[in-house]
Length: 129
Image (cartoon, rainbow, N blue to C red; front, side, top):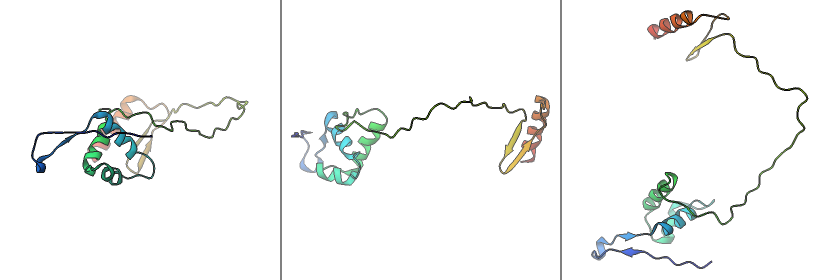
C-alpha cells in the first residue's frame, strides 16, 4: 500500500517550526501505534514526531475527538462452545436476611429485620467509627 504523508508548516523561523497534521494523518498514525508489538516511541520516530504528541493524539482518539480508520484486518474469530440447555431452570433464592459489612466485619441481622432496626445499627456503627 502506497501512502503519502503531507503536513503544513507555519511561516515561523526554523527553530519555531510547528507542523500541523491533518486529522486523517493523525488518525492513521495513531492506528498504526495501536497495533500489537509496536511502541509509541517507535511509531513517533518513524514519522519524525515527539512521542508525547502521539500520546496526546491517542488520548484524543480514546475520548472520541479523533476518529480512527477501520482496521485493515478487522475480522476476528473467537472460540465458542455450544451446550444443550440444562433440563432444570436455574432458580435463585432471594436474600431474606440483611447484612451490614464494614471492613472485615459482617453483621447478619435476623430474618425480616425492620428498617428501624437496620437504621439503628447503622447509626451506632457510624458513631463508633
